[in-house]
Length: 75
Image (cartoon, rainbow, N blue to C red; front, side):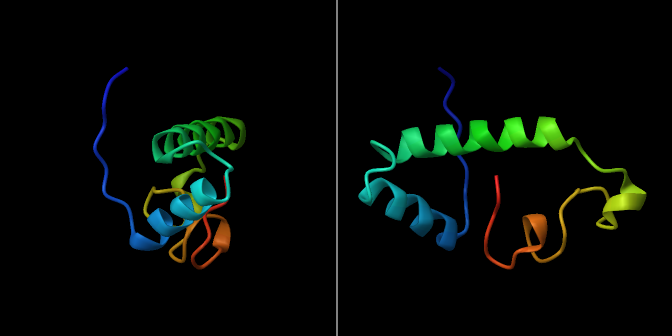
């Protein structure tokens, strides 16, 4: 399996660590792989928005985070 190195905000790392501590995932690697996979599936289901609809310069994300939540990312 290919390896990928990413940098994520500290609050996301803390949320992942908490999910692992609660036993929702065996380890960080499994958590990140599963969450990324779920996010990609959700993205494919909802599809990207046109630039005119998004109003975010083509990112498809609102300025205050995905799905309009300040510090929450909904997959």
